[in-house]
Length: 519
Image 1 (cartoon, one colour):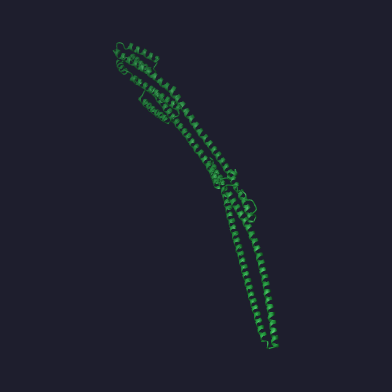
Image 2 (cartoon, one colour):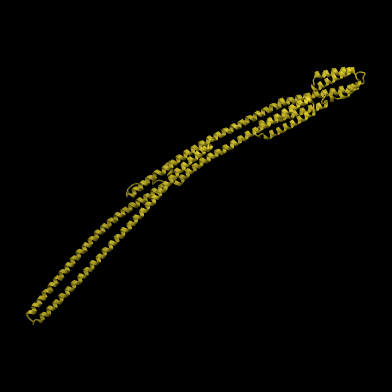
């Protein structure tokens, strides 16, 4: 892994660490977002089923109210019960419409149950309307019976107690037959009607009685039909409405609990999955960060040690990490160039030192040779001067002797003067040669001075090169400091990722406290 990381630059390595952190954060955020949407969908489905349950409860309450007003109507046969029943049916229909509108389109089973409930409500309402119509046609009470009131007035005018008692018994049986239609109640009324007809013979009530009996027979038939309609209504309630409502309520309750359980399960799975991804991502980031820091720290440390050895003048050491393709490798290769330059500078310094010593030796030898030559030349010239002086001295002595001997030897004196003149010219020539030798010595001394000045300039140039090499060493030290700073920032990035995960765990905890948030 470290060899693989060393093939790319530090910028790419740090970018890889940042990308890993971004992927972990993006993966955790994506899971949280998807799970939140799924939880919201499940909670919305649970809320829809709760609304369905509310509508089912309203429908059940409306049905109970309708049945209560139905019973009141059957007992009282009044218009008030009929109106209250109509209001209960309207509320039940509104609840059924609300239920249908809230059912999801994909809930085919609930849609079928709602359609069955609507069918049962329709059959119940139709049965009640049929029963009410038949009851109205038959008369809502005993006094409203067909032609009953007219016969009652005629019987009262006759003022016959037995006839009045028979009439009241017949009307009571009529009321019982209309209230509870059936063969027994109808047979009882038929028997009492025959008894009343027997007692009413000769009273002039025959025509009214026949009309009454025909009307009551029709009313009893209608009451029987109303009773059948009531049975249909009751059957619709018991066999259709109640089972459908119970099934719809159970289905909605089960779907609501299932949706709620699904939301809880998705939430738990999202939290566990997000935690696993975050922990795994942090572990990967820590491992990669450690490998990255280790792959940078060790070579930088080795290169730092090598640079310290180079600073001590050890140019024969090997530079590590030159095969890396990142900034550390560039730094190692720069140090190698610096080491090579130092080795060459040291070699040049040694050569210059040897050249300086050789030049000094040559200069000293030249000076000694010049001194020897000068000494020999001076000795030669001095010897010549000394010889000439001795000759002049001898000549003078001879001239003095000749002067003392004879004044007649003027020619000899002239010859001696000529010889003295020649000897003086020889001394002058020797003096000129001595001056030329001294001038030559001065020129050789000036030449030696120029050579010494050139040597000093070469030494100064070598010192300047050494100062430049020292500046290169300082620049490489700055590069090492920069690499150490990058390694410190890498460790800080890993520490910040760990802190970020800790904060995320505290924020996602359901029982977090201000102290934990502060931590």
